Image 1 (spheres, rainbow over the protein chains, first blue to last red):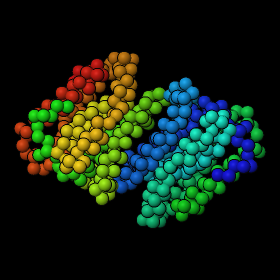
Image 2: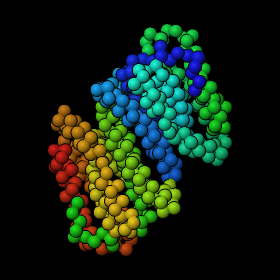
Image 3: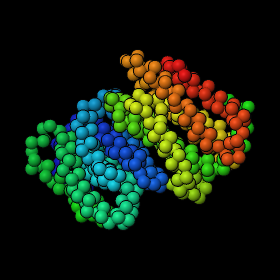
Image 4: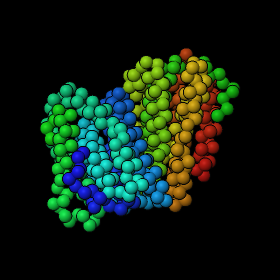
Length: 213
Length: 213
């Protein structure tokens, strides 16, 4: 994501707040993927999604390790964000396996982009390492493969999933916005280019499914 | 587990059948743990259980890798066992978070013991490696910690969870039995010492929770 137009340093919250929110969000993405594992229609799909879930868990654990390096307990540091993120997870759960897959793909894509960009505002000792966590393997190829097969087998899925993808954007932008430092929130104009970039990347992701964003 | 009295070589199914069942069972144990992650009452518990779930996933992936080394697709190899194991997972799901935790602990304990013992009957080139997979970290210390805290905070849980632990044994022995090679199944007398060992280890596991087996 090209973020040269925005100074993320001013938007990034304090490191512990950043890490706590980011770690809990990865746990939430992991949970959504495990729901997709549990309801997968074939053992092949179950296998592929369990690998994708494992990659989210790796990110969560890497972020938790950063919290531990700061001498904090990750459970405690994540706790203040749990209620809001749990409610986001419920709202974006999806009505069936296909919607849940789209949720995993769309929300983890947008949120990983967002947190990777915000990482540039972290102190130098952790900024590169944290950006690296969000650049790790994401399992999206596995999810895209499953969704493309499903849409090919049942073309009527396309319009429903395109609609669902659009619905996810609003809730995901809200959760991203709520992660920014308190001071920068009122300044909507400064946030505009960030969100424009996030939506452009979202459009490319929907394209990869053969769906209109 | 002391298995010197039984010749496991004769009980072990063909390597591909063994690996397919074992890999799918680890995926099932992972699923049960992810249900416990999703319903965990605190972020600390969620964090601990996600680590335990990750360890099951590591075992699953190591078994899948063994299947791939044999030139087979793990999804296909697991498929014949999915229905029976899914039904086992449903029956042992548990009514709430505490029962689900006991399920993860009790069933993964018994099944890991069982598959580790059976591994001695596999061809020499994979036997040690597969036994090593089942000797890997199991996250039981994390689960035992959560359950002991819960029982201390609410002593009435103890009898309900002790009862649930007993119920799990029968279904788990059945699923273990169904994994044995067809030829050895009729010979119940030969299986008796295997199951006696499994139950003895189960009793030690319930002791660790402060519960009567």
